[in-house]
Image 1 (cartoon, rainbow, N blue to C red):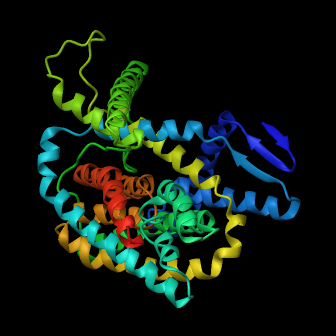
Image 2: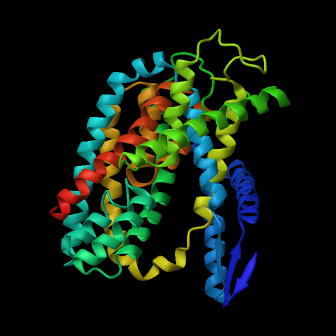
Image 3: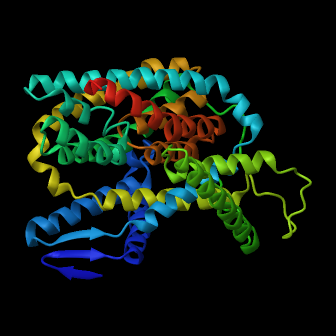
Amino acid sequence: MEFNDGALQLSSFFAVTLGIIVLFVGKRINDAVQPLKEFSIPDPVTGGLIISILIAAIYLVSGIEISFDLAARDVLLVYFFTTIGINASLRDLVKGGKPLMILLAVTVAYMVIQNLTGITIASLFDLDTPVGLLGGSVSLIGGHGTAIAWAPRISEQFGISNAMEIGIACATFGLILASLMGGPIAKFLINKHNLKPNSSEPMDVGVAEFKKTTPIGHLELLDAILAIHVSAILGFLINEGLQQLGLQLPLFVTCLFAGILITNGLPKSFPRFIGTAWPSHQPAIALIADVSLGTFLAMSLMSMQLWALVDLAGPILSILTVQFVVALAVTVFVVFPAMGRNYDAAVICAGFGGISLGSTPTAMANMSAVSQRYGNSHLAFIVVPLVCAFFIDLINALLIPFFLGG
């Protein structure tokens, strides 16, 4: 913890500690406020937004700027996506082949629409095309990472000095909207069409609300952690190899694929020195996935510096309002029918609602909250991460230069 020139910098230890507290705050509030529970608003979203508002209030009253070292948060993201890879069997991937292609096609079309929407609304405020892109796939479906990566180039090439602030503001407000829309969309679709899971599947993330006690011993937990670390090491090596070939991918993506490779490449009869089978689909993996995702999202939301976004509120809120309506319409009227109008489709819609304006972890948190309330959809946890975590970054890398004119 350091305090210099009116800025309080909290270390990674304090950031994780506060992130855990935020989770409990969100849980208590969601349990107490029935609409939040009914609409499957994720606990870290509720707690994270409240803490970020409180931190903004402290800044406005005292001038003290609170910031966090988020290095541990990024490790939690790697943990989470590695668990998704460990749970992905080849049979699941084959099953998800057609839905994956359908969702990918819809997502690509939506990204084009999102950019056209941002450009159109920006033009109404006499703002340049790059500003519209910052309110499109650069910051929304691309998230903070893409916005931070592209803002300097847009600023330098097009003379938009506040490109970074616009991108971060759109990504931040988009993250809030995405966190709040997935659960209500799924609830609406599930109730309207009386949808239920086809079978009782083990949870990919967390424990179902109706089954709160799952016995997990310390050895099962350590076995799961070991499997995650082994997969993450392979993922790191794959990432390093791809960088040598000139291909940049986030570490969590290659760790996800490393988990898939080991899960499907390791024979069931392979003798592990610890005497247990590879922990795919085990409760310990689901528990670690829930803890890592929840804490990651809580830390992401609580660390938002909302006071930095006030000056940009007018045009940005106008762009985001229209983008929200478009995302809602595409999710309900395109994604749901395209994915089969069943329970899996409803959970996928919760995920699409999260990624359309937010980020991959937001999509996963939305689906996790819905699954824990209504039942798991393993197909959704296979299809959505592959589209969100892998293909979107590649497609965005082609679309953004195209809209910028090369």
